[in-house]
Image (cartoon, rainbow, N blue to C red; front, top):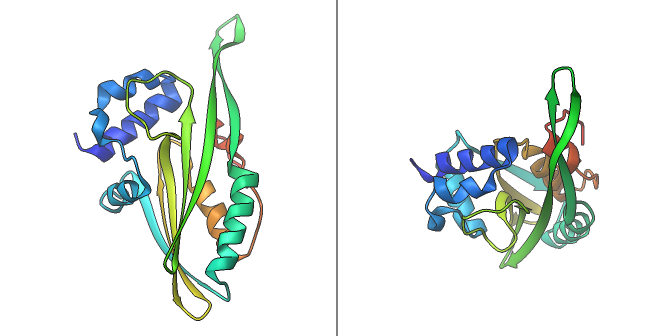
Length: 196
C-alpha cells in the first residue's frame, strides 16, 4: 500500500470508527508526513486523496497576507472542539457512546519572498502511530511573491474523509482580502453541509 492510500484509511478510521489506535497498525510509523514539506510532496503525487490548486492574488502584499493569516488563523483555527459519538438502537432511541476532543493548530512560516500556512488536527483518541507534535497535517498553503503586489498561492489539502477544502477556502479568501470569516469546524467534523 502506498502512503497516501494509508493516509486515507487512517483518516477514515479516525472519523468513522474513532479508532485512532488502528493508525499504527495500518502504516509504518515513519511514513506519516511530519512536516508541511512532506505533506506537499505526498499531496502533489496523489490527486485521488489530495487536491492541489494555484491562484493569483493581485493588489496584496506578503505583509498583508501574513497579517490576515496570523489574525484570522488565531481567531478561527487555533481551536479545540468536542465531537460526540452517538448510536441509534431501534426502539430504544439514540444514546451517546463517547466523545473525541479535536485540537486544530495553525502555523505560519515566513521565508524569503514567501509564506507557508499549515493547519494540523490532533484527536485525543489513543494511537500507536507517531504523529507530528500538533497532529496530522490536512492543509498547507504557500504564498509567493511573483511581482509588484502580485502573489501566487498554491493550496494543498486532503480530500477525505472530511471536507477540509472548507478550511483551505477560508485561508485563500483571507489571503485575497475578500473575507475574514471563520470556517465552521464543528460542522465539518460532523459532515454537515454548511456555507462556512
